[in-house]
Image (cartoon, rainbow over all chains, first blue to last red; front, side, top):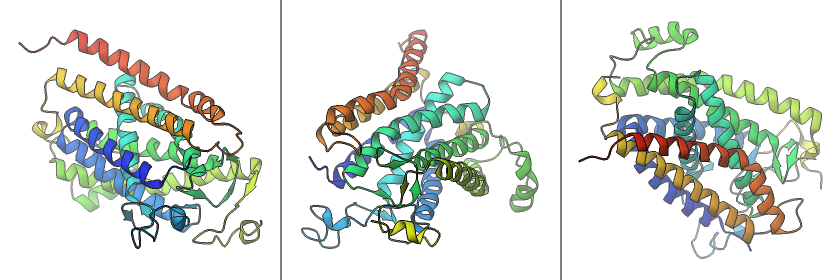
Length: 261
Length: 85
């Protein structure tokens, strides 16, 4: 049976509301707000970047959907887009990563932020390994890049999911929970925020939010380098699929492989 | 963050119950996806949807194990917090 994209869209929006409601009780309104806007910023930028780099796309199959361009004129298969990425993908990441973060926080207590981020990431990837093959067979989204594919999903996707929460979780824990800073960013932050950001315990939540968003942007290149490095090694060593589809944004690096039948 | 803004304003019991509800919603989401895997097409490389379900149960084993440990730990925490009144 074909499952339309609106099924996933609806499920994610409903669970987003449910998780958001409980998160406000667990974390408080301010921290939950910072986590939510940070999630949208973090995943919105990275997902759009990956679509533009022809890693995958969400809308090339729009005409296959029941309502795509027929019952609802201009409907691209998803209720709302954040540039090239469905909004529910960013909210879906929030509704999965926040519980993973809560779980690792409870189970590992005062351990290293990197260890806690690793547990949260493994939990998240484990869940995603069920969701993505369902998405592929229902053509909700597709991967268009060469790589090692498992059940129609490139392993680079799981590597990306791991690092997404690994860095986000560690930065959130250090900035918003512990109210501390990162040594390598101290100098830059002192210039930008005109304050000592190594201790945020006397700072208002709006300022903590701004510092958190800045740190996410600072960790963006770290995320991309880590992700690309591991993914490239996996692709070079184990690639079993050289991009079976034409991408919406064709990749100039692998043109001959991408157009292979 | 200023102390009044940094801590949840709810009672510890309410926070623990909210954590349990989060775990419950997460498990519900897992069940929905297992049902989807059961009723949709076989995954790439699979021939039947039974294989989908078995694959789903295997790959989500770490997720379910961590979720179970979390529920038990939170349940234990809840038993140490007396209900209000």
